[in-house]
Amino acid sequence: MRLTLVGKVVGDVILVNGGYLLAFLIRFGGILPHANWEAYWATAPWITVVALILFYSYGLYTPGRYRWEEIFTSLICAVAILFLASIALSYMLHQFAFPRSIFLIAAPLQLLLLGLWRRFAWAWSMNRMGPLQLVVVGSLSRAQERARQLLQTSGGMYEVAGLVVDVPVGRRSTTDEGFMLLGSYSEMAAAVDSVTVNGVLFCADIPQEIRVSLVSEAAARGLSVFVVPDIYEIMLSQSRLEQLDGIPVFRLTGMASKPSFAWKRLADIALAMVFAVPAIPLLLLAAIAIKLESPHGPVFFRQERVGQGGKVFQLCKLRTMVPDAEKLTGPVLATERDPRITRVGHVLRVTRIDELPQLWNVLKGDMSFVGPRPERPFFVEQFRREVPGYDYRHQIKVGITGLAQVEGKYSTSAEDKLRYDLLYAKTQSPVKDLHILLHTLKVMLMRAKAS
Image (cartoon, rainbow, N blue to C red; front, side, top):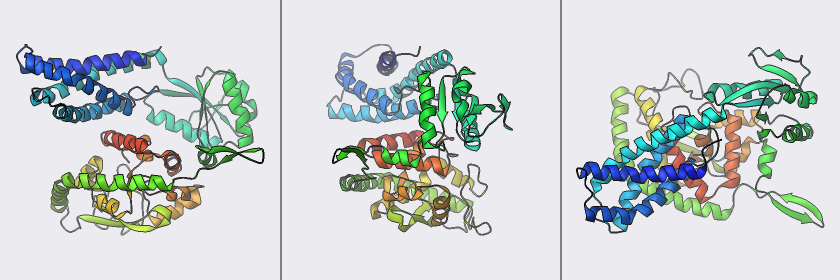
């Protein structure tokens, strides 16, 4: 049995405020001056509410299986933002007797206390749950691909008990990669019953008429059912139920509405102006570092990208690769350990400082802060041929960050990134954009998710 939501909330509230109590005791040598302590108590309820909102926004109260790295980076981001929000609250509430030094002392203490508490809660929950045992269902090639993904990046949270595939196979035979073949689609029921599993993962390439019966078989056995959506199913999401002369129909709502364009544009301009102030000194320092490492190349790097409606624009970034990186190879997608990336460029990419010149693209209207990442025309043509429905992502404005960047990983395929992009396009809202912006801070601290 996992720790309850109430237990997590109570623990977090106690430790957030406990961090302030310890900070007061450290700052004032074990005593609590009345005026200062009263100022804290006047602010504490608001600080607690903000803390809980931040923890919720970073998924710390969302059920699911998460690696410890994800939880701890969420805590770092939440505590850092809480530090700034608490200072702002003390000014807004005119509690000037709340010493600024308390905030500086409390933040690391809160991170330490929350980290220890959440580490215990995570270890206890993972030990009680154990790995999620899955059967993967799909074509032989796609089922193996999904099984491989689960085992390579899950950190032991998932185990694959076997595969159910689209071709007849010998029972209990194995693939070249060591995955057990439990049977074909027609043997789904017997295959699932032959192993001890908690859930079934259905790949997107199962024919629709077959998938319905397979999902029913899994659901009837009380197993958790996970379905990778195809493009058609994503298009149906958020659709509206209507009737045509008594015929029940789903009306597709499209990818975005004109009101959404308006609020996004206003938010983009406001954020770009705010971020431009701290960006200027960072850009100057980055420019100096780039020139010191490779003096013969330019500081800024311009490249054609495909934006909304298929329009090509010039994207501006700080240069992170050696000069003329594609002179001999032609267009090549960057990889996680690309030898063309310079030492300075690696730091700029990890910290996302190389993206700061795109504030200009946002002000010009070529891009938004949140949206699908723009690709180069060469790769867009390639993805159009390989990934059905790829052009749908061009119905909305491209962005500096997006759902694919915060939920996916560096190694996430173009097809899966498209799924994230379309899901964002169907569900975009100011709250969704704020969620993505907050989680972008977390992604910057996680090597595996940076993309």
